[in-house]
Length: 539
Image (cartoon, rainbow, N blue to C red; front, side, top):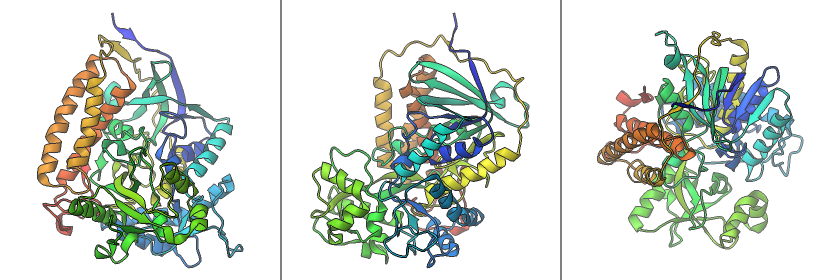
């Protein structure tokens, strides 16, 4: 007898999957006038946005300009960003910051010039020619997300569901194909508490699911960053672009007991200097900006130094700033380092690179629309064209805010074809058995992450990529069989998505026969504008 999960259907005008900066901002704007269901995989603050330390880039100072912000973004993007999108994002930056201030976000104030329009302390990060990163000390994400969550919970039009894991999108291609247009109808979700499958139908659906850093062994991302949105989008028919451009943050804390803790780029922006274990500076030999070079340059330099020397890590020296400045500017980093026995006032901080941010994702237009009608993608899950081959530091939160604003404007002024008459069946377990053991899933999870780190990491080669492709393909085949034979669990949903995004990343990396931005292939070490001044696209 076929077993059927909960057949109750939730219906809404707008379904938002993900509760980071993009999802929460979008919910607030849509929720002013229309009904919204906001779904979070875990708690509302279990996301990369909450962990963001440095801040949000915007041309706020009189000495700065949108033109300079535009130029820095284009330069770091290494030739393949969409300049039309860059212009749109940087021009909307000050307005997005003003909205956050009006929401009550407590950005760090400047010590002087209190009469300025934006009387806030601005820091400078790698790749920026000016101080333009507004921040809330060293926990910007936490401050902004907390204010957004408070506002969302007060809204009468927004219904929040936590601990619901998206399984797959519902589309007309699957349930009512018309051979012309594929339209999103909502999604299936796994209720982690009730251990049940739920169906949510919606006129418009928004993937705001964040990144996929957990496909790598070492990452600054939380455990929830398993690429769910990209995997679901690809299965639904979305185009995927530029996944080879995974940005590795140069300075994650190196300590046996520290997990995923980022030492903000703002530390280097305030004068922090990278040194080897002998105490010697090394970045000037790699780039004229030294420790403030773009992230891809710094990450590759550290990787080269570690391989050359055999050292396990490098050091970040901020001792010259003094305790007062260190505690004032970086209280969370200071306290965390102390917890692990490192006093950054008197000691240098051990750091290593780690997977941090994907410049690629689901291809979208200037309104956040995907190629599937009624489906939007916003934030790190999306490839907007802003970042090109490398993201300028602190542009990611700005992108999330601007594209949430763009998507809301578009969604509130455009209607989709009604699809209430299309029948989507409840989730059927069929003959799937209860999982007997989790060893296959845990082993696959570990193998994928090690495979990606060793063969698709900071420096790649054709032979490494081929080996990664062969093994990842075999793992996916094993998991596909497991997926249909056994009932769903959180682990199965995540590892299924993990291997799919790993394969998409490998395919993108193999397609690009050059080195550009954060993608470096030792067999093709030079940039090739004749053939590769474009995004890589996977169908």
